[in-house]
Amino acid sequence: MRTMQALVKSEPREGSWLREVPLPSIGIDDVLIKVLKTSICGTDVHIWNWDEWARRMIPVPMVIGHEFVGLVADVGSNVRDLCPGELVSGEGHVVCGRCRNCLAGRRHLCAKTSGVGVNRPGAFAEFISLPVTNVWVADRRIPLDLLSSFDPLGNATHSALSFDVLGEDVLITGAGLIGCMATAIVRHAGARYVVVTDQNAYRLELANKMGATVALDIRTGKLADVQKQLGMLEGSAMS
Image 1 (tube, rainbow, N blue to C red):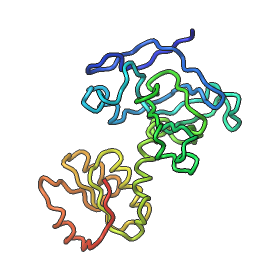
Image 2 (image 1 turned 90 degrees about the horizontal axis):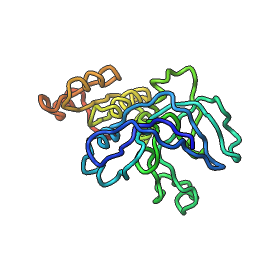
Image 3 (image 1 turned 180 degrees about the vertical axis):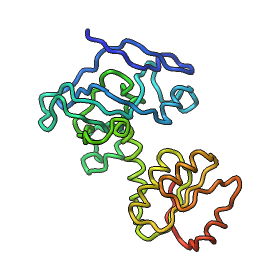
Image 4 (image 1 turned 30 degrees about the vertical axis):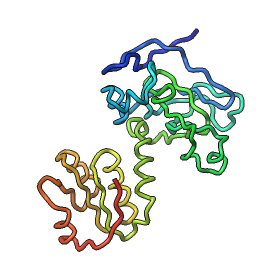
Protein backbone atom coordinates (compact mmCIF):
# COMPACT_ATOMS: atom_id res chain seq x y z
CA MET A 1 0.00 0.00 0.00
CA ARG A 2 1.37 3.42 -1.00
CA THR A 3 1.50 5.99 1.76
CA MET A 4 2.10 9.72 2.21
CA GLN A 5 2.67 12.18 5.02
CA ALA A 6 -0.23 14.23 6.32
CA LEU A 7 -1.17 16.48 9.23
CA VAL A 8 -3.73 14.48 11.17
CA LYS A 9 -6.06 15.10 14.08
CA SER A 10 -5.17 11.69 15.41
CA GLU A 11 -6.04 12.17 19.08
CA PRO A 12 -9.08 13.79 20.78
CA ARG A 13 -7.11 16.61 22.40
CA GLU A 14 -5.34 19.86 21.54
CA GLY A 15 -2.84 19.59 18.69
CA SER A 16 -2.32 17.81 15.39
CA TRP A 17 0.30 15.31 14.36
CA LEU A 18 2.37 14.46 11.28
CA ARG A 19 1.48 10.91 10.35
CA GLU A 20 2.03 8.39 7.56
CA VAL A 21 -1.38 7.67 5.99
CA PRO A 22 -2.60 5.77 2.91
CA LEU A 23 -2.42 7.60 -0.41
CA PRO A 24 -5.96 8.63 -1.42
CA SER A 25 -7.70 6.45 -3.98
CA ILE A 26 -9.76 7.91 -6.83
CA GLY A 27 -13.01 6.80 -8.37
CA ILE A 28 -14.06 7.20 -12.00
CA ASP A 29 -15.21 10.80 -11.42
CA ASP A 30 -12.37 11.88 -9.12
CA VAL A 31 -9.12 13.81 -9.42
CA LEU A 32 -5.93 13.10 -7.47
CA ILE A 33 -4.07 16.33 -6.71
CA LYS A 34 -0.48 16.77 -5.53
CA VAL A 35 -0.67 19.57 -2.97
CA LEU A 36 1.80 22.44 -3.46
CA LYS A 37 0.62 25.10 -1.01
CA THR A 38 -1.99 25.33 1.74
CA SER A 39 -3.49 28.08 3.87
CA ILE A 40 -4.73 27.92 7.46
CA CYS A 41 -8.42 28.62 8.06
CA GLY A 42 -10.09 29.52 11.34
CA THR A 43 -11.71 26.08 11.12
CA ASP A 44 -8.25 24.51 11.34
CA VAL A 45 -7.56 26.55 14.49
CA HIS A 46 -10.79 25.26 16.04
CA ILE A 47 -9.70 21.71 15.20
CA TRP A 48 -6.22 22.30 16.66
CA ASN A 49 -7.71 23.73 19.88
CA TRP A 50 -10.21 20.84 20.06
CA ASP A 51 -12.99 23.16 21.20
CA GLU A 52 -16.64 22.23 21.65
CA TRP A 53 -17.41 22.58 17.91
CA ALA A 54 -14.43 20.42 16.91
CA ARG A 55 -15.28 17.74 19.46
CA ARG A 56 -18.79 17.58 18.01
CA MET A 57 -17.82 17.63 14.33
CA ILE A 58 -14.43 15.98 13.74
CA PRO A 59 -14.10 12.19 13.58
CA VAL A 60 -10.72 11.07 14.87
CA PRO A 61 -8.43 10.37 13.09
CA MET A 62 -8.89 12.92 10.30
CA VAL A 63 -6.49 14.52 7.81
CA ILE A 64 -7.30 18.21 8.19
CA GLY A 65 -7.07 21.32 5.97
CA HIS A 66 -9.18 22.54 3.07
CA GLU A 67 -7.48 25.60 1.53
CA PHE A 68 -4.93 24.52 -1.07
CA VAL A 69 -3.51 24.67 -4.57
CA GLY A 70 -1.78 21.83 -6.38
CA LEU A 71 -1.11 19.88 -9.56
CA VAL A 72 -3.33 17.20 -11.07
CA ALA A 73 -1.54 13.90 -10.52
CA ASP A 74 -4.15 11.48 -11.87
CA VAL A 75 -7.78 11.44 -13.01
CA GLY A 76 -10.59 8.91 -13.04
CA SER A 77 -11.74 7.28 -16.27
CA ASN A 78 -14.80 9.56 -16.60
CA VAL A 79 -12.79 12.80 -16.27
CA ARG A 80 -12.36 14.48 -19.66
CA ASP A 81 -11.64 18.16 -18.97
CA LEU A 82 -8.59 17.85 -16.70
CA CYS A 83 -5.22 16.22 -17.25
CA PRO A 84 -2.08 15.58 -15.19
CA GLY A 85 0.10 18.62 -14.66
CA GLU A 86 -2.67 21.24 -14.61
CA LEU A 87 -2.62 23.72 -11.73
CA VAL A 88 -5.86 23.47 -9.73
CA SER A 89 -7.62 24.19 -6.49
CA GLY A 90 -10.91 22.89 -5.17
CA GLU A 91 -14.20 23.69 -3.46
CA GLY A 92 -14.21 22.31 0.07
CA HIS A 93 -17.85 21.20 0.27
CA VAL A 94 -18.50 17.87 -1.44
CA VAL A 95 -22.17 17.20 -2.20
CA CYS A 96 -23.95 14.02 -3.20
CA GLY A 97 -25.09 15.26 -6.64
CA ARG A 98 -28.20 13.08 -6.54
CA CYS A 99 -30.56 14.52 -3.93
CA ARG A 100 -33.51 16.81 -4.67
CA ASN A 101 -31.55 19.98 -3.96
CA CYS A 102 -28.46 18.96 -5.94
CA LEU A 103 -30.56 18.01 -8.99
CA ALA A 104 -32.37 21.36 -8.76
CA GLY A 105 -29.08 23.29 -8.79
CA ARG A 106 -29.22 24.06 -5.07
CA ARG A 107 -26.03 22.20 -4.23
CA HIS A 108 -25.36 24.45 -1.23
CA LEU A 109 -28.47 22.93 0.41
CA CYS A 110 -27.40 19.30 0.02
CA ALA A 111 -28.17 17.51 3.29
CA LYS A 112 -25.33 15.07 2.63
CA THR A 113 -22.61 17.72 2.25
CA SER A 114 -19.20 16.52 3.40
CA GLY A 115 -16.53 19.05 4.40
CA VAL A 116 -12.96 18.57 3.17
CA GLY A 117 -10.69 18.32 6.20
CA VAL A 118 -13.74 18.09 8.47
CA ASN A 119 -15.80 15.05 7.47
CA ARG A 120 -13.50 13.67 4.77
CA PRO A 121 -9.69 13.64 4.34
CA GLY A 122 -8.24 17.10 3.81
CA ALA A 123 -5.46 19.01 2.11
CA PHE A 124 -2.72 19.21 4.75
CA ALA A 125 -1.17 16.23 3.02
CA GLU A 126 0.98 15.36 0.03
CA PHE A 127 -2.09 14.41 -2.02
CA ILE A 128 -5.85 14.94 -1.91
CA SER A 129 -8.65 13.30 -3.86
CA LEU A 130 -11.74 15.30 -4.92
CA PRO A 131 -14.67 14.84 -7.30
CA VAL A 132 -14.00 16.57 -10.62
CA THR A 133 -17.04 18.80 -10.00
CA ASN A 134 -15.16 20.33 -7.06
CA VAL A 135 -11.95 21.02 -8.97
CA TRP A 136 -11.20 24.14 -11.00
CA VAL A 137 -8.19 25.20 -13.04
CA ALA A 138 -6.09 28.03 -11.60
CA ASP A 139 -4.30 30.83 -13.44
CA ARG A 140 -0.55 30.18 -13.31
CA ARG A 141 0.14 33.93 -13.31
CA ILE A 142 -1.26 34.17 -9.78
CA PRO A 143 1.22 33.39 -6.96
CA LEU A 144 0.65 30.07 -5.23
CA ASP A 145 0.33 31.78 -1.84
CA LEU A 146 -2.73 33.62 -3.16
CA LEU A 147 -4.20 30.66 -5.00
CA SER A 148 -4.11 28.59 -1.82
CA SER A 149 -6.48 31.08 -0.14
CA PHE A 150 -9.11 31.26 -2.89
CA ASP A 151 -11.58 29.38 -0.67
CA PRO A 152 -12.12 32.36 1.70
CA LEU A 153 -12.01 34.72 -1.29
CA GLY A 154 -14.96 32.79 -2.72
CA ASN A 155 -16.82 33.20 0.56
CA ALA A 156 -16.11 36.94 0.60
CA THR A 157 -17.15 37.34 -3.03
CA HIS A 158 -20.41 35.47 -2.49
CA SER A 159 -21.24 37.58 0.57
CA ALA A 160 -20.28 40.88 -1.02
CA LEU A 161 -22.09 40.31 -4.30
CA SER A 162 -25.28 38.95 -2.72
CA PHE A 163 -26.30 42.62 -2.61
CA ASP A 164 -26.41 45.27 -5.30
CA VAL A 165 -23.76 47.51 -3.75
CA LEU A 166 -23.27 49.94 -6.63
CA GLY A 167 -23.60 53.42 -5.11
CA GLU A 168 -24.63 51.99 -1.73
CA ASP A 169 -23.15 52.54 1.72
CA VAL A 170 -21.90 49.25 3.16
CA LEU A 171 -21.18 48.15 6.72
CA ILE A 172 -18.91 45.14 7.25
CA THR A 173 -18.80 43.91 10.83
CA GLY A 174 -15.50 42.17 11.43
CA ALA A 175 -12.13 42.83 9.80
CA GLY A 176 -11.01 39.23 9.61
CA LEU A 177 -9.71 37.69 6.39
CA ILE A 178 -13.11 37.42 4.74
CA GLY A 179 -14.21 40.84 5.99
CA CYS A 180 -11.08 42.48 4.57
CA MET A 181 -11.50 40.67 1.26
CA ALA A 182 -15.15 41.76 1.15
CA THR A 183 -14.00 45.33 1.73
CA ALA A 184 -11.93 45.28 -1.46
CA ILE A 185 -14.70 43.54 -3.40
CA VAL A 186 -17.50 45.97 -2.54
CA ARG A 187 -15.13 48.87 -3.19
CA HIS A 188 -14.36 47.42 -6.63
CA ALA A 189 -18.09 46.82 -7.20
CA GLY A 190 -18.83 50.51 -6.78
CA ALA A 191 -19.94 51.00 -3.19
CA ARG A 192 -19.97 54.64 -2.11
CA TYR A 193 -18.81 54.33 1.51
CA VAL A 194 -17.43 51.18 3.13
CA VAL A 195 -17.30 51.13 6.92
CA VAL A 196 -15.56 48.22 8.67
CA THR A 197 -15.83 47.61 12.41
CA ASP A 198 -13.63 45.53 14.70
CA GLN A 199 -11.77 45.61 18.01
CA ASN A 200 -8.36 44.63 16.63
CA ALA A 201 -6.13 47.53 15.58
CA TYR A 202 -4.00 45.39 13.27
CA ARG A 203 -7.03 44.05 11.43
CA LEU A 204 -8.52 47.53 11.14
CA GLU A 205 -5.31 48.75 9.51
CA LEU A 206 -5.60 45.90 7.00
CA ALA A 207 -9.17 46.99 6.29
CA ASN A 208 -7.87 50.50 5.58
CA LYS A 209 -5.37 49.07 3.12
CA MET A 210 -8.17 47.12 1.42
CA GLY A 211 -10.13 50.29 0.75
CA ALA A 212 -12.31 50.97 3.78
CA THR A 213 -13.64 54.52 3.97
CA VAL A 214 -13.61 54.24 7.74
CA ALA A 215 -12.16 51.42 9.84
CA LEU A 216 -13.88 51.85 13.21
CA ASP A 217 -12.61 50.51 16.52
CA ILE A 218 -15.90 49.97 18.34
CA ARG A 219 -14.12 50.18 21.71
CA THR A 220 -13.36 53.85 21.16
CA GLY A 221 -15.88 55.05 18.58
CA LYS A 222 -19.58 54.85 17.77
CA LEU A 223 -21.05 53.70 14.50
CA ALA A 224 -23.80 56.29 14.80
CA ASP A 225 -21.16 59.05 14.77
CA VAL A 226 -19.58 57.61 11.60
CA GLN A 227 -22.99 57.46 9.92
CA LYS A 228 -23.58 61.11 10.70
CA GLN A 229 -20.06 62.04 9.59
CA LEU A 230 -20.50 60.39 6.19
CA GLY A 231 -24.19 61.11 5.76
CA MET A 232 -25.00 57.40 5.58
CA LEU A 233 -28.77 56.90 5.53
CA GLU A 234 -29.17 53.33 4.25
CA GLY A 235 -26.85 50.49 3.38
CA SER A 236 -26.23 46.75 3.13
CA ALA A 237 -24.88 45.00 6.22
CA MET A 238 -22.88 41.78 6.19
CA SER A 239 -20.71 40.04 8.70
